[in-house]
Image 1 (cartoon, rainbow, N blue to C red):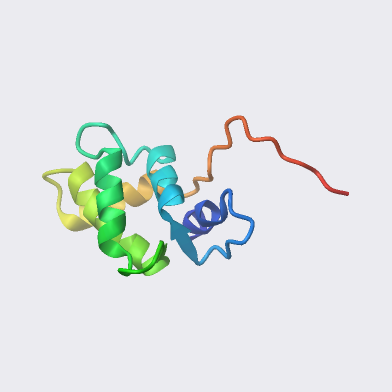
Image 2: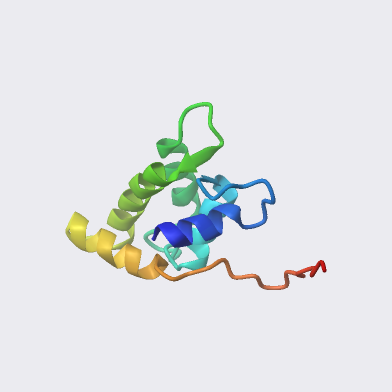
Amino acid sequence: VETSFQKFAVHGDTKATGKEMNGKNFAKICKDCHIIDGKNVTTTDVDIVFSKVKAKSARVITFEQFNQALIELALKRFKGKSKEEAVQQLYGLIIGKEPANAGVTVSIRS
């Protein structure tokens, strides 16, 4: 999960180190990994959870905070499952995923 976190954390941000993730990329990982299903979890839920886990003045979350956010979203996404079960299923959605670069132009510098 941490590898995916790092890939999404640096997505679209040339200055990113991969240690912290902004709200936009958090929403992206939730969308790309199908955590947002439009029923149990919506983009609004994702924004609320992001705001809840981040430090008050911060605009980014760390991997630890990301994990807290995932636990909250897992419980919403997989209602009726135990916390452990829900989190495992959510991790299953994320593991091995990379940002989907639909329509992104990659410039190759030699």
